[in-house]
Amino acid sequence: MRRTLAACLLAFSALAAAPASAQQPPLRCAVDGTFAPHAFPRLEGGVQGFNIDLFREAARRMGRELTIDSASFSGLVPAMNAGRYDFLCAPTTATAERAANMLFTEGYLYTAFQFGIRRGSAPIRSMDDLRGKAITVNKGSAYDAWAAANAARYGFTVQTYDTQTDAVQAVVSGRAYANLGGNTVVRYAATRTPQFVADFVMTDTRAHWSAPLPMGATAMRVELENALECMKRDGTIARLSQQWFGTAPAADDAENTVFPGTGVPGLAGYDPTPREPRC
Image (cartoon, rainbow, N blue to C red; front, side, top):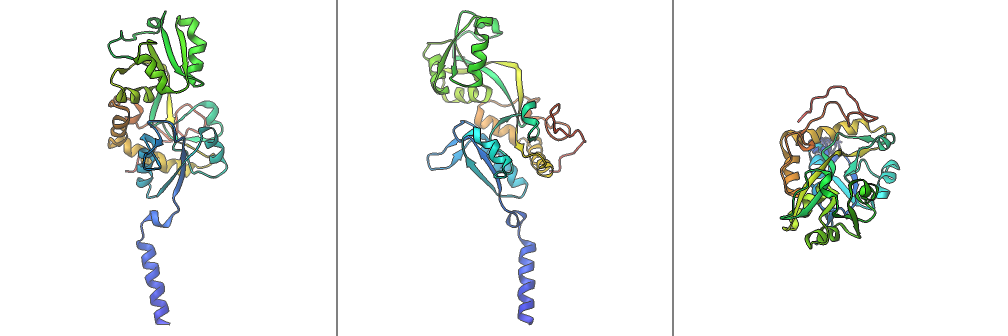
């Protein structure tokens, strides 16, 4: 009897002393593993990138392990809403349409349309500088759709390519004046291609890149957002941004901004209740 009691007490003590991460199952999230530099394959297997580093660190601060799956982006939201994932690690633009069906943390990055040009070319100071020139886009992307809709308005021609890499190379080789893509992707390309430089940002396209969670996951959202806010306060997200995208974010960029309340201001699901990060 004494041995049984002693064994029970020992087991209880071990359980009480175990870290929180050992007492809870791993958090589950997913990314599109083909979207460099946010998530893309490693030669030795698995995925790497800004979003991988970002959410592994956020989970660590939450006291949890993190399991990251790689899948096609189109299937990520349905899988999350079906209960397969706790949240998505993939960069997801917070929009009014999406906010009607899921919760968002505050933004950890701003996404915006940006042009990249060949080093030495005249910089783009306004959309008028595109008149009479050719721009490249990745076929089927949001930038392709925007360019097709606005080519006549601004007087440029559009070249579409099967990959963003090919679209950038067309600019570097002189076949086009500028490439239009997402700001982080354009900045990343500039770190990999010396003759390509990030240039004009279309600030009116700026939006939050946030972590989506299922409707009703309010407690998990607070935990995740708290970790992200602490990472903003101590400069972790800004350092990751500079590491992966090549330039230091400005003081008022999302990497450095702790937004009021919980969620994305102005969208459904936003909670304006003041909340101080617990770091």
